[in-house]
Length: 301
Image 1 (cartoon, rainbow, N blue to C red):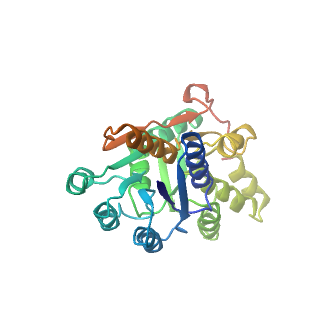
Image 2 (image 1 turned 90 degrees about the vertical axis):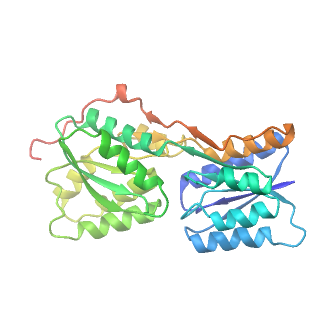
Image 3 (image 1 turned 45 degrees about the vertical axis):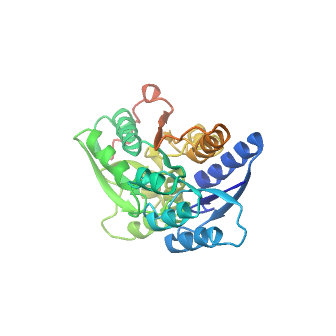
């Protein structure tokens, strides 16, 4: 028995941590896994999974995937028709019950409450910049629901005196660096009025800091880098370290759902018990919101 794990990219610390989490679960529970990465390409991801499903004498019993784009209903249909269980990470799907009944294999999703991530960002901003102002806000890609729901959560709970200037990234440090660097080239992209920088993952906000550090104007460079920077993922080796080193004011700890999903599947397989169609893990603030203190910004701002 082998489980195929399909992740979005190796160029993201959260995805690498996802891989490490399933490797740990597999070792502990005596399972075999095969991990593939889609390079943030939804077409490539579908082709990769289909090629494994259709592989002669394939011993894959389940596919657990974090989709780059949509919920991959057609690929899920091909897998479940072949008697292969199907698990989806961090993506809402509407076909789990129907497909499971039709083909007699588990179909399930394991994710994090994405709107709650936005709620935490809003609470962090309320504590860090209580006087309000404009926040440079870097979203993930439009494909899928995570970025949209995180933004909705932030918008719903942020103080009225905080406004968002939204840029679009792609979950990687390189994309954060590129989108912010391009935006900074505009004559209107000055630090005046901005009070914080938020990105929907730690990699993008570190990329943004890199772009700020490359500003030629020393005053502008210092002003941007002095703002509180907030991320998400909060891994012990990266996001939490960035907070301890002062590169980030705060982050959101985002559970490693790949390991959770694999363990759920293996336990259900061993016991013959059903798997819940939908499981949510809760994100948390790092540090705790209650421990945050207002940032003192320069009076010149």
